[in-house]
Length: 184
Image (tube, rainbow, N blue to C red; front, side, top):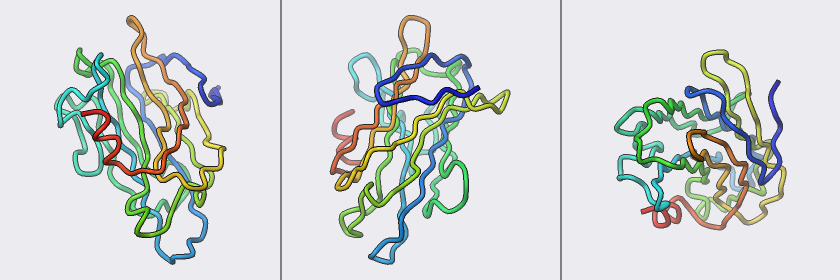
């Protein structure tokens, strides 16, 4: 049975191979332009910086050098049910220097399109056991982010020999470049 997480809650990840699924629905935009939300993962070392430029996995770099984190591709509209974007993770392949994977979602061209997360509903992140196909945990973003254009949904981090997921849910009025600057 899946665990529904609350903001700040942490849960151990019981499998090395899993999918991070992200989903959302956009309200009708007054601009008439589709929402393009982009999921990204930053693979960080102990210093909270990406291990290399290749360890930033997003729509223009779909996998890290070890192929431990593989992005399923950019969904430019969010149409359909279920996961809108998927990132496949195999912790058995992760670079041994990695201690954290930060999962962020940003709205492409948010400022130019006058879009923000206040216009997004039913946003979630979930962890699905790849071998069993079962949902292990889910975090639904239920806060109203009326001006925010980027959200750190969660982080997968290592404590000792165990990997855990933390439901973060922190919104910011910024773009992907903010996270790139923060983690490089």
